[in-house]
Image 1 (cartoon, rainbow, N blue to C red):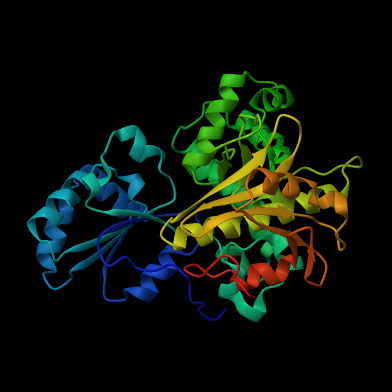
Image 2: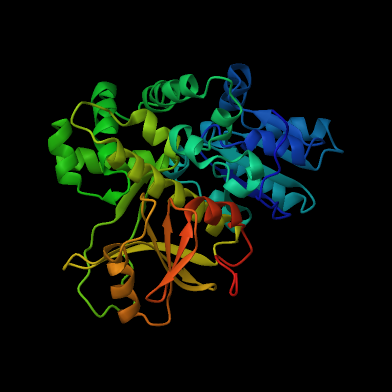
Length: 387
């Protein structure tokens, strides 16, 4: 597979680059900084060496005086290195560290200060449609997702099947994050039913037959491993009573598809609808992240049941976005957006659907979802005026 340019922009100073495994962090650093001194802590011998003697890093740098860019892959495996890296940056301001990680858990637990602000925090996401260009297929993406590791594979289904197992073995089990790996595996299946839905930890606990506090801890594990995230309710200047619970999503639609159990009572359109909403969510997160976090992502739901899938709020204005899996737009599909605009008349409203035409109705612009995703580019307006 040919090299695909990413929208991620190098900030030009030392930074952490977090992201789940397979999102292309190492590929990006190797391409953007081929001259860098790279230390991959996934290699067993290097992991043992730096775990026992973190100060070895200083010796390596002294032996390579011309290498001013240093990449440390999977820094969370040896968090003790961060104290030394902080010193090295203070000693030589021209020295730059790029620290990649697929988990924030050990860094948080070790109490490190993430270099006291000396390094920025950045995130690498799955591919965006606009990065793939004409190679992007919404139908395929909804099935196998946009994880670069999967997109580049000749057997994407096999890679997806092994992905969750890899995390269970190498992250959850090896690091001793949870005591009962089988219980955690059941939790993964149970919470897959919450993808794109309001999160009810008590219901998930009943489904996998564990205590609620255990499920709350497991959800935090997913977020620390960057496998899932929660979106809060938009409550700014609220005129109506809103719910308090967030929505939950896996970071990539393909991962959701691989974990979600299927049976004779599952309707295909129910799963595909959740997959489509998750696809839009992961694109909006990447657009916000790569655009220097000038905006925030929310959803909106009142206690009376009015709902909007996504709300974007920030420097680029206020946007309400609804996602529908159908090929036609019905008046009922617009109720949530119309209710939102009655409370927030300054908002611009979009309805993304599976049809082929742009339609404007009741102040809502209906857009083909694939068109919207292909045109979504970080640093540019969500949807340009006059488009």
